[in-house]
Image 1: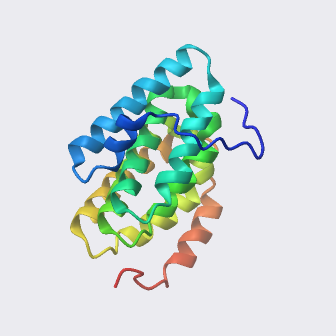
Image 2 (image 1 turned 135 degrees about the vertical axis):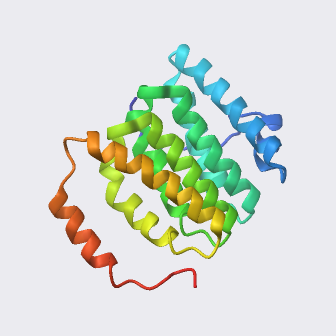
Length: 195
C-alpha cells in the first residue's frame, strides 16, 4: 500500500445501501453494513485496487468517525475493523490511518461509542497482533481511562481489549518495559475523566 499525500476523494465509494446501513440506529443494520464493507474490501484487495480501498478508508474516517451522529460514529468503528479483517496482514500499512480514529473514540461523549471503540480496537488488534505495538502507549492510555468509565459495558469492553493487549505484548519483541513504566507512573495520579 502507498498513501497518496493530500489525496482525498470524498465521493461515496460504498454505495447508498451500505452507507444507509452503517448509519442506522439498529445494531443489526450497522453490522450488516460493516459486513458489506468487509466483502467490498476483500474484492478490491483481490483485484489489487489499493486506491479504492484508500477511498473507502478515507470516506469512513472523514464522513463517519467525526460525525455528530452517534450511530454514524458507531458504524465507522465497526466498518474500520471490518477493513482490517478483510485485508488481514495486508492491513498493516494502513494501521496509521485506521487506528487513530478508534483511539480518539475511547473518549467519545457517548458511552456506546466508547464501547464500540473497545470492540473495534480488539478486532483490529486481533488481526494486527504485534504490528499494533507502535500504538501501545496510546491504547494503554485509553484503556487506563476506560477502566474508570461509569458505564459497566465500557469497562467490560476495555477488559477484553486489555487481555488481548497483554497477550500481544507478551509476544512482541519490541515492547519497552522502561517506557511502559514511565507511562504507568504518569497515569497513577490521573483523575477519572468520566466522573
